[in-house]
Image (tube, rainbow, N blue to C red; front, top):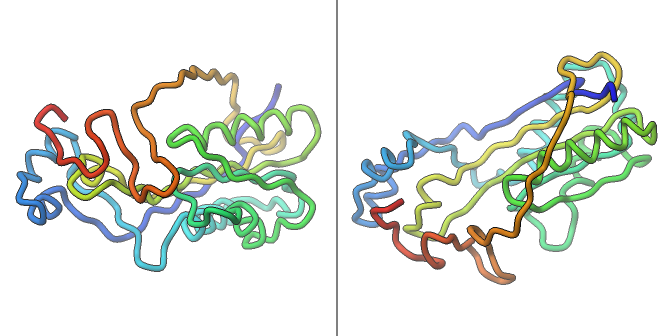
Length: 210
């Protein structure tokens, strides 16, 4: 199946914060935490930035690198664990922003870190079968962590968009493989503001083992 990446784009918020600054708030050794997590700093979204704005910026950067007519895009998937709306798709907003509407299918995906690559696989199948000419897969997040949790030191924000097709490929995708298990290492129940991790319950302070 001669399918691959036709174009790509990315966006990372300009603001940064260091683990040391986060640690000062909680009276912890943020510098040591940063070393343990191999993190020097992380991106922080501005007050007016979310998964929608990040996805739009990445998608527009992707379209700026190609002469593909956005009306030829037949599918657009946005994978994220932090969609801003509980009931309203991110994908339709992004599709409108790049002028790909209305003749396409658009879906939001949720699978934490795997949602973006799942979108790529879905686009590959649709393009490879001839159902669509081009598909867009986006992975974007403004990940949150409970105050003082290890995730607060590491989870950040950014997004990447990929245009999948058969023509003018810049990177052919020869094969994909998925390894899927129900591993409860990361979860967030309905109504909870922050995700929980295996390392500790929601709102727990980081431990020396992390």
